[in-house]
Length: 355
Ligand code: CA
Image (cartoon, rainbow, N blue to C red; front, side):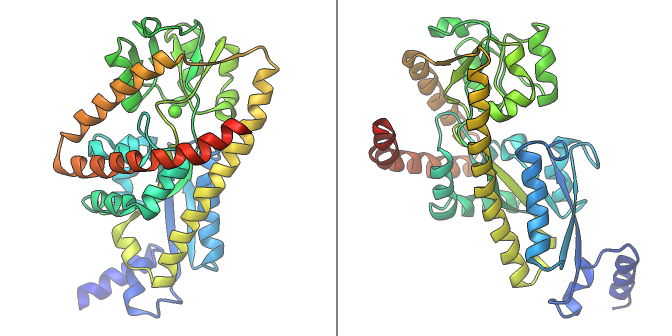
């Protein structure tokens, strides 16, 4: 008992109110949280999404949860968000699940995989198709609660300085493309390179890389990639609708009263749709700009996409055999994709063909 009192007064001294929550009226307790993110502070789309999420939680909770947001490298490097929140260094984080493939290869299913789900399908799998339960099961081992909290929508295929007519044109191509997309490129003879966003422009300008993907017109234009490449290819077969994640330290989340838990969950849902809407609008405007600036916007030939799709299926199947949980998540994801595809074809796809 004495020890508990000591810890309580120490926590109060340090300005942390979370430890005292269990002994006081939970509805009065004020929580002061830190949010760490993998994005530069206020970075268009992603960083703005993190700020909006923090502000929304504070407003909806009537200041009962106050969150200070740290951009990449302000408190920790961008790729330490997972460990830092897991260990309680910060209570909450905003990032992308595919960065954590070193923790478990299955993490990648919760951002985006090549020839995987669109943002609309992804939300359906997560909220109604059992995806979020599997995500929670995976992250439980790391003392984390995951929530979808943003989506970029389908990305672009990338920037090239030569035409891609056949898969032979991908052979030896040094392309900045991280994750599973990179593994697929490697299997068809390309050379995938992982570079942080801020390094891409110079690498392409100096010829250190031949090609790059980043996000879509909005973010790509901000980096000036149109000044150092001729062709802008679509579609983003490797990232058809990446989900952005909010992760919450499980101990911090468990201490919250029910209404605050619901406020966090609801704020994440709101930001999930808000970020996608923002990206759609800004991508639309940036595409117009690029079209008027002598960029050739080209579709990958179907035969190239066919080869990439077949190769992607092999890469995903290999990933599934890494451990039991990867197999469980892979099976759920792929079954969902196979089941939803006929519906997406006769709804969105056929409608868009007529518009
Ligand atoms: Ca990307």
